[in-house]
Amino acid sequence: MPKLFPYLQIHRVLGAELAARVLQYAIGREGAFKASSVFESGESQRLDETVRISRVTRDLGDLGPVLQARFAAAIPTFFEGLKLGRVALKPDCELELAAHGDGAFYKPHTDNRWGRPANRVISAVYYVHGTPRGFSGGGLRLHPNNLLPGDDAPVVLQPEHDSLVVFPSHVIHEVLPVACPSGAFSDYRFAINCWIHREGQSD
Image (cartoon, rainbow, N blue to C red; front, top):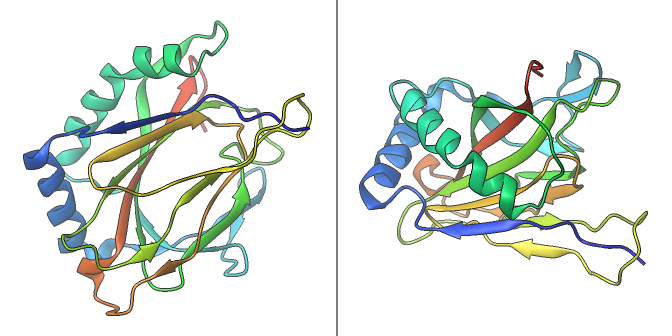
């Protein structure tokens, strides 16, 4: 039977003021978001709306250094909480801002690209959204590893405002379908995807 790997769910991560800045930045940058791609092998990538529907940008503006510093400072906490074996990690993070509107989803996958070394060690997803929440669904489902003994079931973690979910990058996970009836960008499910790499390697 499968076993679920350790994960962390942390609330009130950035605080009200900074979380509001992240949300307003995301809403104000609607034109910068592009349709998400999926990787086939190596560097090859393509759009495939049977696998993933969302929009992303790597442009975090002046929030980039602020978020880098916050996430980097938390790496020791992530490492300890996930009970990872000894491995040297890079002090900075790979960041991506994602927007999920009506019909968005991402089928089960891992965060290391097929056909490339497993450079990503820790994955973290930070959530912000408007109040009242304009969407439903969009939970993050973490799947057990069926190669390890145990009797764990998948767990679904909800995208709560100013919360963070942290898990090993090799864990199979998915974004459950999102419903956003208004279609307004301000009502989307926003997330910052953060990946922490092995020392001396990048994705």
